Length: 355
Image 1 (cartoon, rainbow, N blue to C red):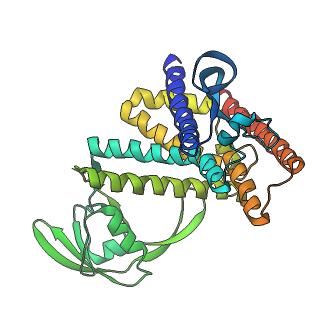
Image 2 (cartoon, rainbow, N blue to C red):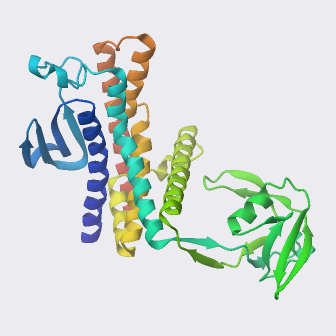
């Protein structure tokens, strides 16, 4: 329990700090004054004022905020602070300041993955055959356990993922395989067959297979700085793409809303990852950071995405939305977030005590 609480504080602290620091630093670069930089909401626990800005830690650790000069349209800004007012900045600068929070969360994931790849390298699953399904296209073609597939249709094969992609994308046409067996290379012809399977969202899909499983033969690959950076960007992109797709599937109803988790689930998972080691915890932080970025980009008022939506409307109309319209939208956004929080807490409690 202690580990989970400690890990939860570390995870949330890192995510909130990076998110709010993104807003803060871009605001300062855009010439906007910052009155408060707070980790957490509610009453102040401790803090210090430096110049115009009060840096504080607040009692409720489920978020944070950056209070800027004139960040509300109806804010009463002293004349001497008008040059530092958020509202009086150009639409482009306001857009950049609001977008900076989730963008910094994406950058955090890239940095974490970069360090992990640079320190630990990566593991590549080699295209070595483990089990051959009886009666499958692979069995009929003569493939055996232990065979190493080195080429398909004259194209070299280095990894299991690469090989699987070539088979899946074959469309069912015959493939010429070069296989290494007992030090010798053999040429075999195999014709993939369609099969029904389920993807990670539980949806039934059709894909072409030949009926083999991996032998689990993996090799470690050390990565240089450039390679590690490339891999970290690819990893971040893949997780971001999967997260966005998950949100779409959730809205469509293809993914159960019961899979959503809240603070209790995050605390439990953070504790588990902390016990597994620093690398696991760092990977978990990167994963959550991407999720936080996607959540904040949703066009829900009170979230960053809601503000960006208002800016997009302002750009189209050539004028800001009326204060009344913004207030109604903000109230609707708060209502949606409260419902979401209640729901994820319900999921957490149900999962922890009744599953």
